[in-house]
Length: 577
Image 1 (cartoon, one colour):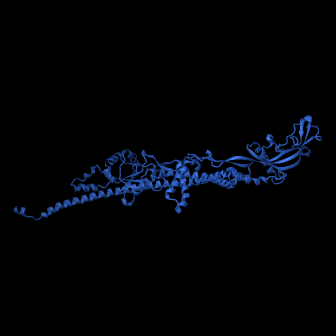
Image 2 (cartoon, one colour):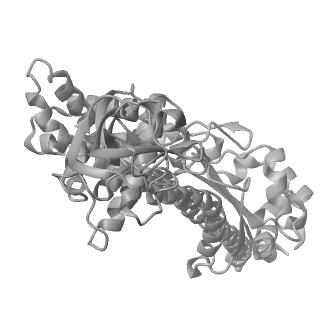
Image 3 (tube, helix red, strand yellow):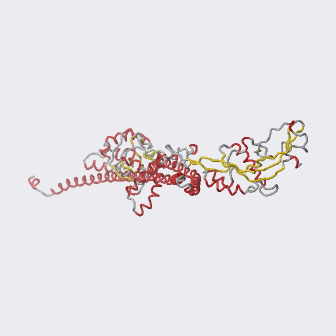
């Protein structure tokens, strides 16, 4: 018995047994904890990658909207540039007219080329207005499509990222918290786009000064701001749409021939210019004989055209007010008067006009081209083109009793008649700068984008909720090896980890990123959608309120929202990092 208590052989075996049990427990503990850490880090890496990828796509979507804005402003700048040039020419014309009196008309030499340039600019602006407005409407629709499509594409991108082989197929789906319906932008006022187009024009004008370094950057920026404000204030004039004023009208008097000369109809159809009158003189003079004022003989070239124009001129010159002068064929004739069947007859009266007998017509003594500044015919116009336009000579008021009863013994007098009126000169008021309200385009559907002031019930400020992107990654249930290892190491049963309240969270991970514009000055807000500087970055997770998560959770098929959202909100600080 004594030898049993004093015998020390085998003592190390007992110690080794206890040490083996401790080492075995440590191995199980390390394996279990390592398995849990690997699963957790894989899920978190997947959440981080998907959240950042979604935020990057959102930032790229904002930059794409900025690009659409810039394209729209560039297109509209074409119209603004033309209207600026038209305004400059109008001012030049006003100066020329103002100098006409002190220079005794010498300055008017520049009027014709200036008005010609102005006409060409008006025609170019009218031709380009339709295509430019079409580009604006396409840009607006494109921006609306981008605004709605990018969040869906970002969700798809987040799900594509977690399928990478680096995550060992552990993550299964990515859910945005809360889901974003569209980017936080909206249609801006059209005046903003018009002003930005004006800034583009200003930058083009300032480009040479910038290259040679004549003007400091601060001065160029001030000029750009002034042009932008001016163009935005007068958007109906410079951009053909929007609200605002137009420059004051400036009018001056011009003269033109009526009926219109064919060669100058295009000029007259857009802007009346002093050049139109000069351009029409040659063609007008070619229509009839400049000595006799008569149309070409019947059968000769131009005969029908001359008679048609004379008939039109007779009507228009009779009905148009403000006639300054007339160009006409003046004939001196002998006219015979006699009595027949108790009525007064004369040559070239209504009964004689269709007669082929020369005795039934006036004897033409002479014919000449004549011009008259005062009123012609004095209300005694004849609308019958077969006869003279009017008789200028005051004819006595004959009665049948005063005249012989035979054509052979008729009483003959000499008269002057206007055979044909070829043209008349009218003075009209020409407006240098004029915007017809009927020509203003409906600005609906042509606006650029701006950052919205409210989105999803939140005020939109940089760093605010509308710019955040949270991704909840749902993965496969963690292997029970981790729980079993920890249980064995603790000397408990193999089911010891099954009732842990955090067990369901083992298949979830959340990460947060944001798109942001690198500015802290709220005064820069108008520039947020005009500079392609939107970026993305990771942020510390802030779990939103349960109410914001309900819609996101319900979008995942087969997910018990009650079991997930409760622990997620309660232990947000545990799953956040």
